[in-house]
Image (cartoon, rainbow, N blue to C red; front, side):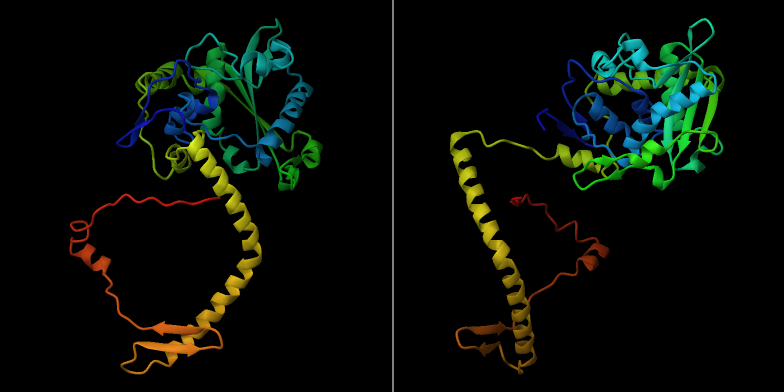
Length: 355
């Protein structure tokens, strides 16, 4: 972590970066507290470039990227005119636009999936494509988290109609992750959207969200001014934000001074030698421990009243089992009596691990 972060209560304080990331459709719903898988604190970390979870493809993201173009083709078979990003921005459109189709807006941005046009060629629709195996989430209505993503892009584009396209996959339709971390997409490529596995749900922005700007845009703009502009994060949750907090609380430093660099190098070489020897020694150590435990139990069984030690003699070694007493503290009882915290102190300790 290179950014200077100050920990204050349950939030962070930083010097706001000169250039931030923007509120995309995915971040929009999360900031509003409507994403069950993420938190506003995580979005603040990403937007302010304090920390962002590394992106790794999964069978679900690969399936989505593979099937999305098929969904657009399917819409065209239904007689709809579809505009693809490549039609507007050309090849390599992500690189050309830096992943933002709304550069004129200082706060909101992102990329729509597809556009629809009317008979005059004017853009009048936002298409948002989804793949899922959770049919139940779509039975009554569009999941609000997804609807708001598309609603934001419709608002920014100045159109009123949104078409949500959802394809429902079975387990067999997902790609298979191979041993080398890649994905075999043969099963996914066989999937063809049709009337039995794909639905469309249409809504008008002005009808579903009649006060969209007042109820959604302005609260997020306030959130931006309160947290992004100031560099003061929203409160974090130790459980929900654990992965991010663990990363922020770890200081990765490089051994770049001459003294420590040579020490680290020598220690690394020596550890490598020991690790190689451990591969041979470790099984023997485990066996020896099991044998020692049996000898210890044998000695314990042979203690007499008054004995302090029992010795088990071998040809080369003597195993000595000593008997003693130690005082244990009943912490639960002290806590019940309200004394544990009174007489407890926190002490800073350091532990070294090498991996």
